[in-house]
Amino acid sequence: MPLFLFFTVCAVLMLGYPVALSLAGTALIFAGLGHLLVQMGMPVPFETSMLGAMPNRLYGIMTNQTLLAVPLFVLMGVLLEKSRVAETLLDAMAMLFGSLRGGLGISVILVGMLLAASTGIVGATVVTMGLLSLPTMLKRGYSPALATGTICATGTLGQIIPPSIALVLLGDVLSNAYQRAQLAMGVWSPKTVSVGDLFVGALIPGLLLVVAYVLYLLAVAWWKPESAPPADREALKQELGHTGSILPLLVKGLLPPVLLIVAVLGSILGGFATPTEASAVGAMGALLLALANRRLNLAMLREVVHTTAKVTSMVFLILIGATLFSLVFRAYGGEELVTHLFESLPGGVVGATLVVMLVIFLLGFILDFIEITFVVVPIVGPVLLMMGLDPIWLGIMIAVNLQTSFLTPPFGFALFYLRGVTPETVPTTAIYRGVIPFIVLQLCMLVALALFPGLATWLPSLL
Image (cartoon, rainbow, N blue to C red; front, side, top):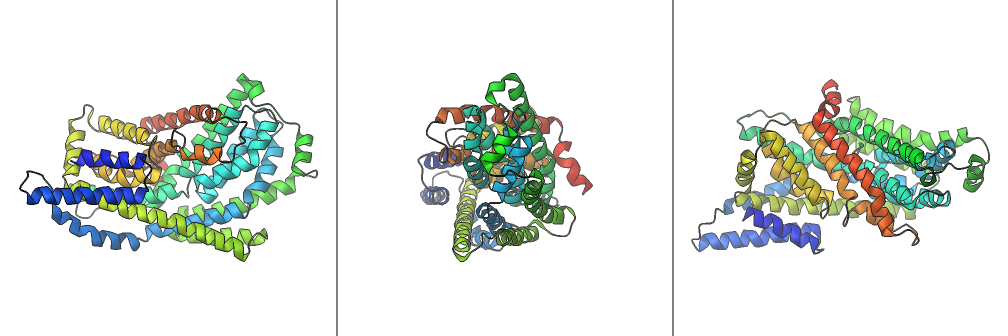
């Protein structure tokens, strides 16, 4: 029954029904079925009493201080998108690197990295970079597949480079899973893993991914020069409308996002603020940047707040639905089933981790990262942590794995975002071809993390 419940939810989600209602609705139907079968005297291991924990769970979600960072980071990201910080920065980077082979692509990656560290929202980065850089790259002779693949992959850096909404959600879920695992092992004073720990742990893997992307672009530019030709710097200056010195433009574009990143991440790394408090700092910083750029007005502010409320409501409604799903799954004995399944796998903890990573990767083809975070991680997390895995390492492994879900067809959201702003002359197949090498690079990062766990755990251990 637990497995049937899980596969039913996946099927309902693939039919296109709203995520939160699919999770809660399917769970309620199975809960009613379990209760009915128990009343009929059928040998179904369903504990109806577990559903009594739902009111406390709901209260815990709505009063969770960690999750308060979600609306504030979303507000920060939307404000930065509307204040057009990326435009000046991209123009400066394009003029700085554009005369190199693959230089426009490198400038897109570097700007995307800074946007990822500023906004933490994949959709905002992909759409912004698609609108601003794709026409220039295509005009300068870039291969459509390489140009679209670079933009999609760069956008997904917002998934792993902190401050990331995904890491906030994953940190909260993993924290609960870690405490449950320790209590199950008889540790009555359990340790915790925080969102800040995941932020610090994700820094090195995120920067290594950026380096891998740049090296791949340089390799393509060397191997196939016609795919990423250099641009004439003077012609590029005239096209972008900046004929003077590049230095003032670079300072104007680079300074605001760097200051914001230092304010947010610096306050966390320096121990001055929790991620929740730092998210408030970031939101205020983004508001001041919009004000300084003369982009802030009442209409824009109304749109920003409305978008933030919509995204936040969606996240919390999905979390409530996932909580109900998790309770029904456990009421059917699903947790014990997963534990026995993992213990019986060959290879012990290595085999179990490999299976989980494979399942998450395959689910990424059909499910969103939020659904996987709220549905799959609470099921497998406690079991893997009971087997002795480091929670920070496991969190970063899952985060990098979930990053691929934005690029894997048919439901990769980065593909949808870019398709919406790509000219009709660029076929969808070109976008799919373009992201394949970047998916391989992300999987290589997973392998590197598996072989060298210190990539994720070394920096948090220092701090």
